[in-house]
Image (cartoon, rainbow, N blue to C red; front, side, top):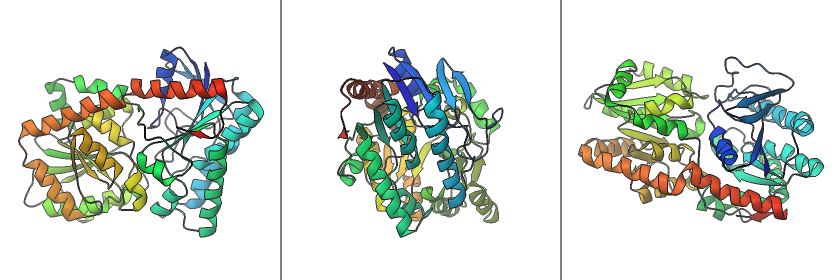
Length: 413
């Protein structure tokens, strides 16, 4: 089967469905081509050794990747973010549509919703049916994060998304909450993520862990690690408040923020201004290195804004955290908390409530080491048995085969 993957973001960017997913499909005997942009997420600046070109073909670990031009940006400006999304949509629709090989089926990663334009045009002119994989509910995410507040604009985005959903042969969503939220979207099946390199780092020796911890200031500390994008949706001011409440009485508890995003600079300055010596920031790490950092955690933190939308959202990092095998503290209501609790991999706290966050951290801090290790092992086992890239890819393979063979219309899975 010839499969086209369409995603604005792809390796070396941190992606939920990236190179590992493509390689798993290839390992199953399928020919995979990726249509994507030039890497700039999440910082909004082009990665080293990359420059925007009219068209670039490359091979990543045997996977054919076609990159088309876009406007690099990922800041708080709605205009520049629109230019980023829109430029890729137009390039993929025109240049990409002419350059990609014939395919039996197309996998489309959403967000952003603008990726629906090339998906529909490739379906119309190249006769490639597509499976639409929804990881953010637009326009609701735009409103919840405050990135876009125009009622007229949000209404237009909603109508656009409805159009894309109707054109998709199948729609996949990430949680039961999304299924309930969208009458024409259904799934609840978790799928694999790009964790192969992360999991490799779990085999590091204790000596390697000590050396890594010493080098980045995490040795002999109880490390609470948040890894990933630091944006408005993550609402991390509450975590800084929790750090401030603990800094004098529990000097060995340390908060570690790893990654980038539009809020990272402001949060870093806040930590300096408030003299939070128990908070450190580490720059974004490639997938090949992030596992080594996460493995140093005593607690891995997930946190999102306390908004009804996020109660039906399962952040992509949830699966990565489970795979790493460290205890998890979930500052998200609803489906994400339910998943971690079901796995026996950690506990939940109230999002944007610094008192709840700090009390939950102290609960974990006071647990015997054996219980913390058991939580981590539960999460790793749950991931391996139900959420691994291999299992998730097999689920998607069945869907892709069905669409390629039947060309069914707007059927949800």
